[in-house]
Image (cartoon, rainbow, N blue to C red):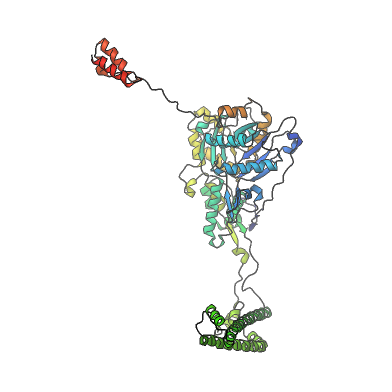
Length: 624
């Protein structure tokens, strides 16, 4: 919510945080003995989090947190690809950025392999050809079988891992926050909003009800793009400074969800409320202001420096031109000496190289160059003698700063209004305020697209409308159980006021005097990893253990196989249509009217015969 006790003028600045490369950790001894500790990877579409599932206190948090993106210079080889925190800045155009995700589903497994290489290398795994630790990885709700098959193939075939377990990030966060408060199995409904899309996941008796799960294709990336579009339309002079990375920082640090959107917009109409709540974002700028307040002495000094600089440039150009003309004249004189010495062959050859036809043309060029050289030397001598006089006479004329070009040209008349305008006090130009972004209603308009996707032109239901649609598919008793535990998780749910907004929407959706409870994850962005770690500690990897897929299971049941557990998807095996064996053709109705002997003969002729001779014999028998 908007704060009320803030100072009148709130000025912020972009952090523009530069990432530093992750260190390469050594493999801890506790993760090898007595058994290999599982590696927990929260494979998020915005950020990847990886760490160890070990009971020691030093492994309570993920070791690696980095953006799920790979950057490669345009035209560079695959080996030069940089991953995650190795990329100092995502904004330069030289980068070709790629992610392994399409929406929230992994489809680019080449990038996924590079990210897994990055994870295993920085965690200290140095074994050749295989990873000897079980892998616990998150996947999208209702993940397609083909995507899981490709992921299992990558892990088992490329890295030769012993066990793999898959789970949904929202369910891991749900069980991490509910395992101490409620007795399992839990029943509730999860509202999860990440970077690319949002999900509504009903949990009935401890298991995901995948049939009634729904997805909304609006989340953090759409909000950041919407904010960037709004500010670029508002400040067309700062298009280059309004980057997507800065908009993500602005969205996470300055936005809030309005409890009542239209009522909050009405508050922003009040000038006092606007001045108190608007956030001014200071863009970097140079403090040098053209045409600023300078004294007459400083202006004369700058004019003198500019005059000397222009004179030096003109002198240097004259010297260069004089040197070029002298070199060309010497070359032509050398060709003319060939004619005087009687070397006609060499003379004509040199004329062809100079694109000349006769000795008269050569003499004409020599005369012109001699004249140009003499005039150039004379100008150099005159400019050296008149330099001091010219400087003094020019300094006596009052001319504004920036008119140095006119100093060398007397054709421009002097401005008659310069003396009058000198006495007028010009308003001071505030360069700092010009480079400020006033973020007002944008603070609440961007998170609002989660509830009203029509603001960005999306033709779909908002999060709460979809929740109402999901609840309508259950009985009233099941609805009461579900809304008694509404759980909010995901990085896009961290906006202030999000919980209060969901409670207000539920109050409008539910019947009169019905009860509901909304809880927010302790760490909406990280609880998925912590929940996966807790599950891995409670369920050790072993052959036949619940939730773990062994290499033998992979080889026998296929890559799309999933061992279900409390935080996993529901496994729906792929049904392949088996070919139905062809039934023998029934005899025609006309043949059924024949006598018993004839009918038996017709049945014999309907069966496939090994040769054409037999067919002809059967036909003759039937005819007789």
